Length: 217
Image (cartoon, rainbow, N blue to C red):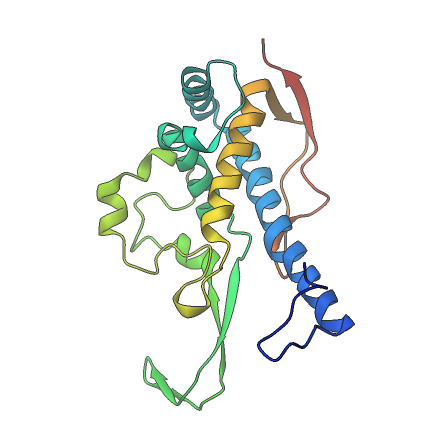
């Protein structure tokens, strides 16, 4: 599709443009979702009550069949687990923005073109916004809580005009994949292993997350 694409003047992309677009798809649309699922499964393994509640919902809604998009409205707790995982371990742990004009923040003046880094990780753990920062509580995401939360107190996909274009699809994808995995398998970390983070362009776990996979009865 990229090779066949034409702009309004009928021009095609040069090889470097196609390469850059493909790398953007891989980096922004594949690794971020897989990291979200990785951290969600890790957090569930550390919180057996939440894992049991999730499995109960999936069994009740799906009744043994594969999850489908039309199941999403009923997979409420599953969606909350995904949202909570992205709150605790946002793949885009820091987001950069360049100022379009001079700006003053906290008494400091910055010229146009200043690059600001917005620390998603830190803001998601700010006790001004959250009663239990750092604790895995998917049930916190009630409609009332979400309405009261300031606009940019939760922004794993960024915000404004440059918000991630794939945000809606990513949430659907992660919810359905998590439901499909938990429906059939239970994952537990290998003994004596501890999560260590590597905050590069995205928030990766150092050495991955080695887990044991057991089929659910």
